[in-house]
Each structure stands twice: as C-alpha cells, then as structure tokens.
Image 1: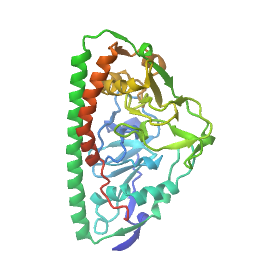
Image 2 (image 1 turned 30 degrees about the vertical axis):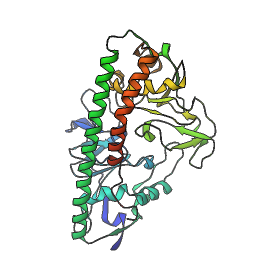
Image 3 (image 1 turned 90 degrees about the vertical axis):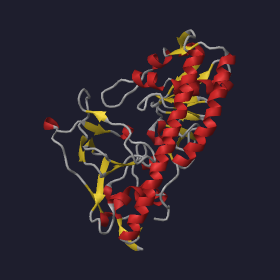
Image 4 (image 1 turned 90 degrees about the horizontal axis):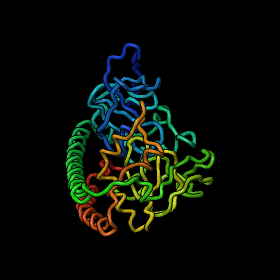
Length: 358
C-alpha cells in the first residue's frame, strides 16, 4: 500500500458551459442523485426547464459527480452521458491512471472513512457543505495498479448484482401496484383529506439544527428514507411542524411521492408532509403501500421548473379509494408478504461495496 493525499491524485474539473450557447441536452440536479447509488437513474432536460444560473459545470462520461452539500447523504455517481450540473456538484477524475484507476475512484468516495472525513470538514448548519480543498488532504491507502484493476473488476461486478436485486425490487413493486388496481380500481374515490390528517412540513430556524442529538429528530426531505422506516438524520431544538410516531412521511419535493414511516415523533421540514389515518394509526400502513402503488400519479402531480413539488391543496385533494377498513388490511397483508422478498433483495442491494479502512 502507498499513501497519497486525495488532492494529489484527483482533480476537480471546472469546465464551464456558455448557457447562451449550450450544446448539452441534459442537466443533473442534486435530487437526481441517490444515496449510495453509483448510477444516474434520472436526469433533467434543458428544453422546457427554467434551470438556475448555478448550472454551469460540464461533465463527461466516466467522470465522477459528487454532491458537496449534506455529504452524509453519500451522493456519488459516475456519469454515463455528457451534460451540465450545478457548481455545488464536484466533477472529479483521476490525475494519473497509472497511480489511481478512474473506475476505483467512486468506491473510495463511498467508503465510510471518506464520508466521515467530509462530514467533519463540512461548514454551515442549515445546508452543510465542503470545498474541494476540504477533501484534498484526505489520506488514501492505494494498492498497486494491478491490485486496483482486480478490485475494480470485483466491485463493479458486485454493483451489477446490486442492480439485478434492484430490478427484482421494482418487479415486486409492480406486483403490489397491480394488486392495488385490482382491489380498488372500481372503488369510489374521495379526497385524501377525508381519510387522513395531513401535516405539511415547515422548516425550523437553522440555528436550532444540530447533529449532537439535542432536541427532536428533524427531517428536511427524503434524504434519510430507507426501504420502509426513515433513518437517522439531524436534530433540532426549536421544532415547528411535528409528525407522530407511526405517521407516513411523504416527500412533497422531488422525488415527489416517495414515502416512509417514522418510528418516532419528529420535526418535518418543507420537503415533507406527515399523513395519518383518521381512524387509527394501525391503518397508516395502508397509506404507505397505497402511495407507493400510486407513485406515477403522485410524480405526475409535481410541477416546477428545476425542482418538482406538490402543494398543500394538491395533496389534500389527492383522490384515494374510499375502501373499507377490512379491504385496507387485506391489501396491507398482501403488500407485507411481498415485502419479505423485497427487503431481502434490498439488503443485498444496499451493501457498502468498499472497505471503510481505505
């Protein structure tokens, strides 16, 4: 193993696009990058979009994109097309592939040790960020180039398996969606506000944000969502809008309609809404699975030039099946059975591929 400083072996690419003569079709915003996902599964189209002036950074296939804000979200992706991203997203590449293989770079940046380094160097409380200079002094232990090639082949092969598991998860979701349509397609529809209590999020003062466990858990958006239950995030000492334990949390900003359940009382920011059954909390899971089955409907409701969102009136007026409680529980039982295989696949697809010691 040889030791290197990250800034000695990796360069930040700062090629800019002339927005008045932009030759690129696509752009990547922060919401297009997913936690622990090396692939860009979504992209924005310049045509018809009012993209902000910060989107000036050009990227090319093979280069690594790194979300420099809220780095605990572990947003690292490898571009497979050319386009433009914001100046808050780093575009990175190896300076010399005889020292560091470009194909190995994203795995280094996904490692626990690299993530912890970036968190410690982050500045700001509301939307913590790092500069490239904060990453430059990260110390990397690199094997020789032959071992790097072997590791890279193994890690990308594992990533391919992960993607196969994710396709299995998608197929399971399609099965649940089909069951939802079969059970409730002909059922009378009523506005969501008739069936559930809805709390729209409101961000508290940024001065109260902390990562020290002070106050109550705080979620600004869907960044901490997992397969079912929301994970660990920040805390705040001056909460505004609260969700109760067991509530369904829905992302009302891109990605619109993504849902999780909160296992404990928490404060929710403007990117989320909390939804709970007016009958009893035991029926909240019906809404979780129903919203997932209605993902396309919810996503189509999103509007906005750069970041899609839905507002309070749209969410309150969302038409939902006015299903009997017995039917709701039957659907939940079906979805939970499907989840048993889905969660097993998800566990495999969420493996951290790179040793935390690198």
